[in-house]
Length: 311
Image (cartoon, rainbow, N blue to C red):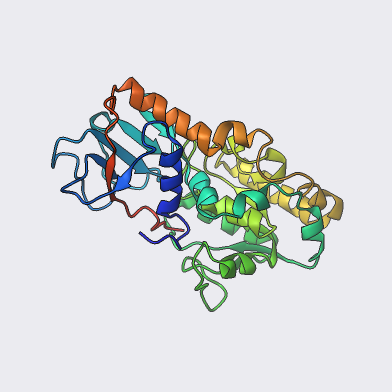
């Protein structure tokens, strides 16, 4: 797996090395490995041998996106980008968190007060929309409704109105630089679920945009509510409210500036989402399963392709 991708194996290396149980792991091949870490792509190795520890990871909203539904009970640990109170071995790991820690400077940039940076470029265009996956009716409706107020530049393969498509990958500086031309960005998720927060809202913040967001109702467990505009419910009334709010912010500089007074991430981010905290939750689940008590060095085989994200 490439360490240059937006979601890369380097974060998992760091996370496991911080763990009290998996800290001595080495990556290995299928034959020699005693620990399985896999995702929902390309089938499963869960029944190919008797694993000492089996871990499943997915940052996607699996059922909503039509992926194969897995029996989480066959795994010792589930790292998931969604919340499910019925799964006792699940540790929440939103893709947004994975993305932040996969790129060394993102967390520092999200901790900054954004007023000065934003005021350097006061003549931004209105709003952008960068989507290739056109299956979300909620997202499509937001684009249509906001476009009734002002023209929204659409750079993706879906609903493109620019005559060309953005070529830069989502984790690149070129992608962020294009978004930096805009005051607002529609950064709706592909679907709605608790803790299903992806890189989309992160990129909006990095570009100095005000995110117009829909997806995880608990997005404010990661990002500050006063730095974004949220569609609370996909109702006609709420779409109208969001468009009216955007229009007001667009037209009143003081209101626009108010969204940049605080850093995007919540004040107690480290308490909730630091790597040591996530590692502690992982260790607690594994210990509850009474796994790896003999302290053998975990030899992990990874069958992951989770950074192929549909925008």
